[in-house]
Amino acid sequence: MSGFCILYMIYGHISFMTDLLGNFLLEWPGYILFCYMPWFFFKSGMYYKGAVPIQTIRKGVRRLLIPYLVFTLLGCGVIALFSLLKGDFNFTIMIKNAILHILQQESADGNNALWFLMVLFIVNVVLSLSNARKINYVIWLSSIVMASLTPLFDCNPWRWMNVLPAMVFVFSGFILNKNHWMQYRVTFWLAIVCFLIIIIFSPSYVEFYPNVLYRGNYTLWILSALSMIVILYRGVEYFKDSICLKPFAIIGRNTMTLYVCHWSLLLVVKMVADTFHLTPIHTLILMSLTCVVFLPFCQYCIKRFHWEIIIGETKNN
Image 1 (cartoon, one colour):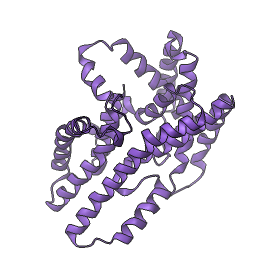
Image 2 (cartoon, rainbow, N blue to C red):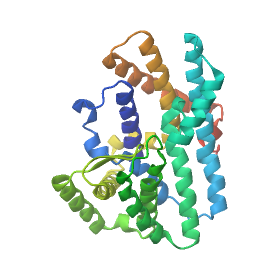
Image 3 (tube, rainbow, N blue to C red):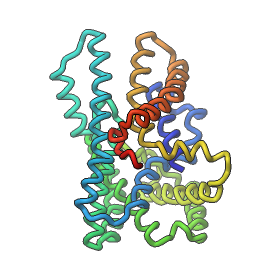
Image 4 (cartoon, helix red, strand yellow):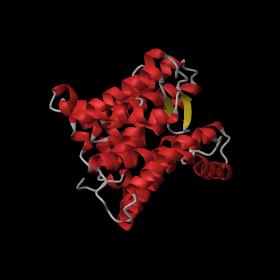
């Protein structure tokens, strides 16, 4: 399932950078994969093994914060390079802007997508502390209530309110997996019924990163996203031995490389496209081809030269 979600995320970022969001031909997968961001938080909760807080912090630094730092610097380097070529580079302003954007938006402009790593680190620590004190259900329910209230507040330009829905999905993944509810047939059918009722009577959607409610009801969006996660998870599990899913399984095992590398690649293509005044469609095609060629190459280089540490892995992973 992670393979589908990471490809859709990159697909969405390409659409965003080429100003082609809103085009039905580009957005139709979102009717199924609208839960792609909740899934990555949910998955983290599923695989939490009950580590004590200090172990969670150490693991989070290695697996989340080191990639965050490395690829933030890489993205800032890309912006600096193009600023130098244009003749308007100012080191002091660049550093100030990077720090300000991290404080406000959880990531620097050079690699906006990395906000997920910072938020996941925070939420994993909260889960670890909560689990140590046996208050998981209290925190889970409290996060649902608080997240549902966030549309009442205008927090721009601050993005940190998205920690609340992140907590909802991480805790949901942990609790559902711990109680083996994901394996029950009744859970699958309840998810289908719940999703259909919501999509028919009150379709709801929240843009996760800015935590903006675009339509419907925030709580119903949480329920519909959880329902679709269960549906897709069970569907992928049922067909996991299908030869058609093998490529997506391979992609799913390398999501971190694709995740941390793709934004900087797209940024380079965007700057080149702007320089040569390419049309949005031509830019989209160029970005897609760049990802197809260079993202596997990035994965090869990381493994070939044993740079696994920069994506939060060890040689034994």
